Length: 476
Image 1 (cartoon, rainbow, N blue to C red):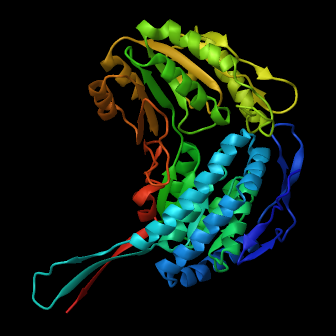
Image 2 (image 1 turned 90 degrees about the vertical axis):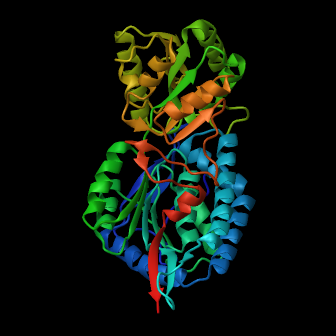
Image 3 (image 1 turned 180 degrees about the horizontal axis):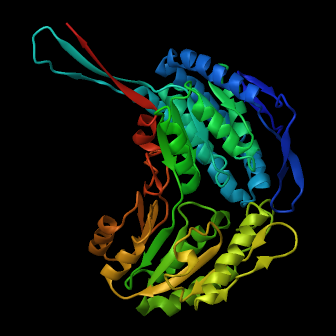
């Protein structure tokens, strides 16, 4: 049973929306209604803005040591409640429980990391040109933050924003995805119980375009952080420009994976199948364009299809399930359209290519072969369990094709030749490059893309710096 109570959090108080509007929360595995998600009214948003403004004054004046203490307690509570939060995550998002559990552990780890790093927001002393002059460079929190998180990683997407802002000394108004509200709420309760002052963390829900446009129009908000599509990122950036708000944009990708002829094929296949189909392919760094050297193409396809066919598909709460449903019916329709278009252009379905069952939003793990670069799926991010494969023969050719899109979030390379690996790393247009593995996201390393995949980083020292501004002080 889904146990999380879905409410708004404004000025330290859990409550429903003042106008009574809501929308149903659907379990994508069985289409059952789990709860009602309350929508914030304009007056609710005004109260959240006022709370964030007051909360910022309190939190900014709190010492880094005290912030560390509160955040560390919150991390401990998240870890202690990991099993319950992971169950909530799986019921609203659909991913396998083992994946959800790992994601909640990431949230605890990231909170601890930002808590520690907040004590290291160092300034510096600059030697002066004149005697008797002292020149100081200070780092200070930028101000109240409007944060918007996507549904595909309900724990890690939200915690990067919450913990990054809090570690720097900022207050936050967070709008999690309406498809996955309970995970963020469960973690917010941990922060509240750890002693976070009222108004420092606020949570609202509603029609995304209405909430974002209202918050971004306010002079109270000084910083915007979004995990979402490129189209939404462009829209929010335009809105933020009216008041010159600083932005961090973690947007869509279309990750190429290059399998060179000398790659350890068995290791590459084990790794790629596991990461391609985690969260049903609904991952912004998921490998989505498979460039396979022509000399290993056929054995790669055979090995990939065999592994994909052995995946256990089902409700993420069931034992042994490796891939759950997609988030909503609209995603099933999108997968059908990608497959149909690719087939019309000469691609062939090796395995999958259709929906699974008649209850829940399941789509079969799919492998397409001989996919031309003109197919939609080679230029539009599929965000689903479809792997389109094609061949390459030369380094220059595959790099040109890999870099041919405006996106640049993640790229992956498989080779035993470290000189070739380094050559590939330098040539690829991406914010993240994984060689012989796919783990490009940890609390202590920067995560972010280039070009139309956005700008700015979350996690790492860069993630903290995104919530800080620089002040120069000179004394004589």
